[in-house]
Image (cartoon, rainbow, N blue to C red):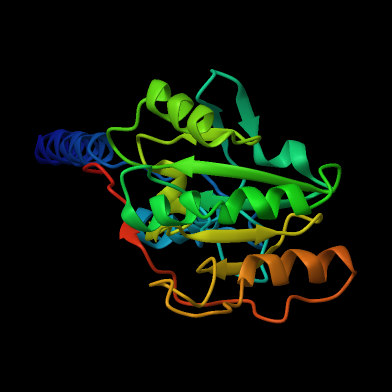
Length: 237
């Protein structure tokens, strides 16, 4: 009789332990394997310990910014006429990017003096592309078209009302200039020249110097300067 009672008690205790183990297992999440037994996390690694294996993918997707000596960030923008322009489509040619705002007195002065237009006319069209970009939050295609017609511009004004490309290039002022070589590398960034107030009899045009050097197969004599002008009127990000 005693043996039968002890046997029954043992069976009940065993069943209770199995039930407890099943309840614990139901609340545990087992991480998916991330590699072979030799390279993956150890059997005792937690989900937090396994998570760093995903970080290189996240870092690779981080947006790039414009840096002298590094590849220029690619972008696609629509101009005042609705035509789409992608930076990569101009690979093989020197590209000049000009941040513009027709409302800026510095821009107005340069356009009255035809600073930009004279440069464009002096460069070979088959080797140099000039793209103006307006990152003002209130830019309108009709206003850009009117400005082009008023000054007889042969180049487009790309519309960047969201400020995406402006921020990507860290464009701070109008004008703010960038020169990109045929390999797609930023070779100059900064001011158009060394005469912010137009007080010098003879100024040094940094963009002209950079483009002419690249056309001749040389490095630009100056690669970076402090831009001047009106601040770019970005909207809220």
